[in-house]
Image (cartoon, helix red, strand yellow):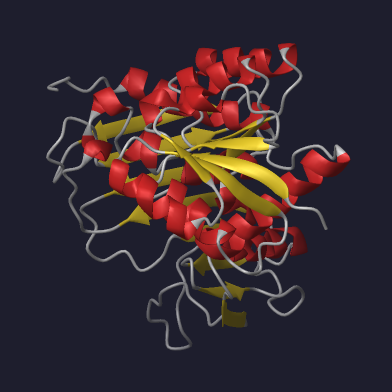
Length: 356
């Protein structure tokens, strides 16, 4: 299997610790890092050691003129995603773009238009769609054991504070742009990217952040005849012991990124009770509460891996198939643009004071 040549822009937490971590593994037999772009001198020097044989640059424009690159990863600062990606594609490069896709839906559409005009690939890196927890969730939903799904609750919560660039609006940061693409993307995927999806409620606020961007977000999405999507990204939830909860007419699926539990009412073992219009009473005539012990089935288990390791590997395998065989992207770029549209709407509904 011939390795495809990839250039990495950025050696921060995403470029090095997610993408680079996978690309350096012996199990990666499909991509070879041949170039690294990084403004920081120390990081460039480290890249020469971590990616043997690569060339390093201080400016991404130094890649222009190279004809050996199969794709360029853009893991630059979030506010640079649009401008750098557009420039790369106008110079004929395929681009793998870190989230967030862009600042707003217009920028997404403009990048997709540019990709089409220059006959290049534009892929958005959202590896959560390949996470083991999400595979299990979709398996349970498809099985029908939960019945008619009424609500999906998604929590990316914890008790922590930040004071880095990811707290600044001028850097296109905050909980929604930074973490939001994962829960919002999954919510829209479960809604099948319904064109009639609406943000019926949203609230952005600040709690522990040192910057001027939000570190608390509440978003509720609805679409006709589909479950309610209740999304939360919070820095002040000290007791969050689950990330996803699916409530159906016959039971519940709940999971973290590491394990899950499932409890549901199996068909045929709890016959329907006829409605009683008067107060319930026991044999002695005393009032009693309306309750019963339902017969249920339970299941629990753990996942082998996370979105960071398994999800990243599966994403790159998908990307390789697209680049080598022309197979369509499974994580569709136009659908990821809808994620940005929700984020844009939420920010429009909750304008935050700009301080920096």
